[in-house]
Length: 249
Image 1 (cartoon, rainbow, N blue to C red):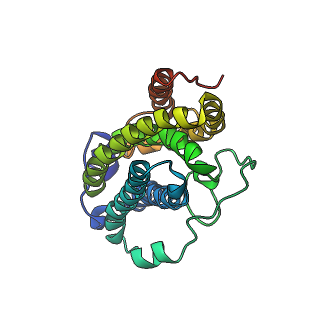
Image 2 (cartoon, rainbow, N blue to C red):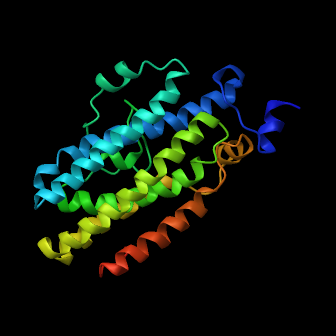
Image 3 (tube, one colour):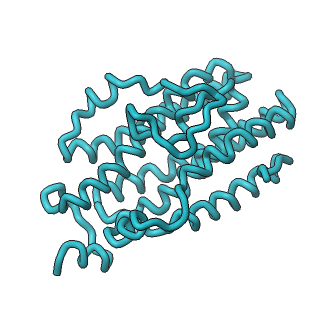
């Protein structure tokens, strides 16, 4: 049986030594995109910690930054097996770089790294960061629930450890959202939701593509982009309704 047939039937790989080139290339894109996005996200969120309204909110925000970096480290450990120089990778890159708030790049990545496009935009204070996190943590959880089944076993194990951390960030964001409504009012909250909703939504990609079909055959993906987007839509809409907010039209 070829490795491609083995993977198509649900097989898993456990070492870089038996990974075929095409599989390796796609796996590294997935892992690198996660690490770059998390490091960029943590760098941006760190800048707004001191804008939090109270000590508990500052602690919660700092916890999110800490744990985002820790999840990046978990995936970097997997990348080390493929020869990645993790110290150079992390320390010599401007993860806090952002475009202008009004820039419109669609789903394109920055040339310098593989972060998701949503992490190319700056946060505007703690309130904005909270509602960005309310949407983005749910998007991350949707995607990681798929990645826990990825056919490269070390990565799957890392994502299983990451998932409960990201799910806890959802709870932190929801609690922060309630505080923001008390402090800033619904108009500011809705403005942040309106800004971030389409940008976070682009994280899921477009409709079914040949690449998506290829990833599924290789066991690197199990749920289609549109199905994941639908799960995210429903989850976010329920969360916003509880806060008295609305999803954008």
